[in-house]
Image (tube, rainbow, N blue to C red; front, side):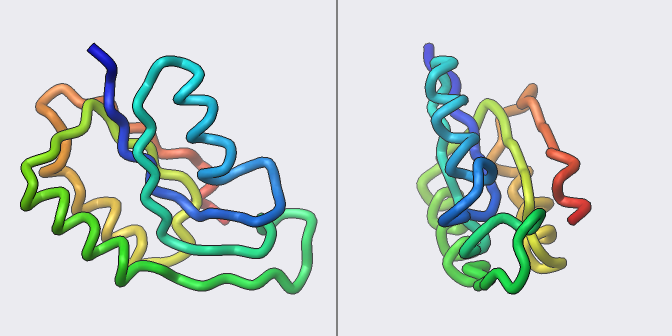
Length: 112
């Protein structure tokens, strides 16, 4: 059975990180990677100046509620760069979407 993992992170237009990197790697490992963007950035935050950043926390919150209503459960959760306190609270609040023995991984890049 294919494992399903919720991936909460930013989505960058330029930069080999964020959802753009995590989803294909997990997919290549045979995991159903379920991306949930919490912010949109023009570039990643290291090595670039003046990047644009837009929170999509409102939509992420709506998506999480819909997943809960549908009874969808995940075998794991990966959080990466979240970008702010609200996005971090959303990630913390997704625990009820996880199966009992779900693997939880927090990428230390959130320290940005």
